[in-house]
Image (cartoon, rainbow, N blue to C red; front, side):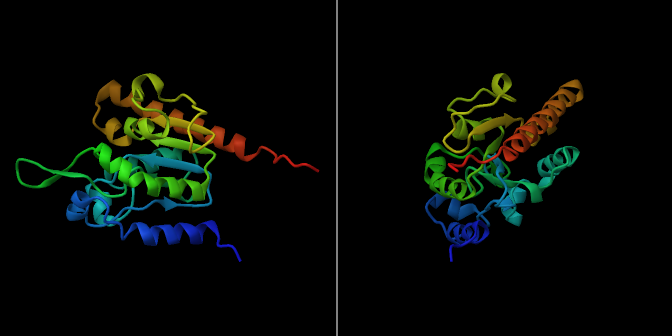
Length: 213
């Protein structure tokens, strides 16, 4: 009998957590951070890479940014049980700061290329209808290179190789760095863009399947 999507995703996770392809990341990571949520959902959220909290707990999008994302999802009557949430790169990229502690850094192009095979397999198993790119770096991989968040967020793209429809939203961590009216505006954009992603997802979900008979 053919394995379910949940079983195949679990098999993939079991292989990914043993990955040692990026020597630098292997030396500094606590663990591989695989996707979480409902692997049978066709609505997928994709960030750039795990941070310190994610690396410590093995769960994507936790900490302050994750809590804000959860809050915005809840305001749109969504939860992590309704979506699949993952990252382009599965291990935390780090840099040593002046105090000697490890800080977060963007993943290198070579790290994105090396980890992309895992993302490709992950998305091929889930076969999403709608992808929400959380932040510009994710959109630059999923939608097109050099994605301009300020100009292109909230727009639909139908030429991604990963899903029929892709949209980019502000990263909650970016929103949290803002203050005053700039914070309010960015948060409103995040809420409305996720609402639009849900609307598109529900619209596509309800489309009748075409048959020959």
